[in-house]
Picture 1 (cartoon, rainbow, N blue to C red):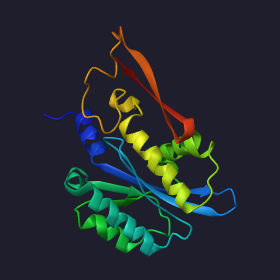
Picture 2: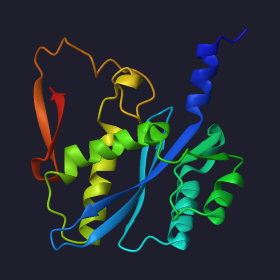
Picture 3: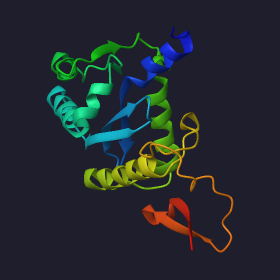
Length: 200
């Protein structure tokens, strides 16, 4: 018999959330990025950046995500989005064709999409508050580097300090017996983010 906690965990692991966030360039232009977050794995997908987000552009980003996820899309059951006018029936249809149920949040209820709001805050605090974005191509490059760092290296409390792309503990993440090893730092985006690993 399944407990309520187990059922809730299964539902959460099948949720994908999406949200737009804006980026102001050093020249005063405003860009928009579309982010998707897989709730169960915490895997981040920033599918695009544009100065003019139209419904057609948003639909193309949905198609790009569906193509990128491939068979992993089968593990998802729900897409949670807000009521932004840049989404539309065609956007929803991309996910409904993959048998996901699209759920629009209640008006003025950002807590319903809390994980996506939280990742937007992390992107701002960890990257965008420290780098002057010049233009659209620069924003894509910076966000792609952050997405790689977030998915491959950044620990997550909800995943027992594992990054999203690590499936299980290998012992290296929490190994305190590092005699004979020294920490090696890798600088990301010119040192805005630092990753540390032990090397022999």
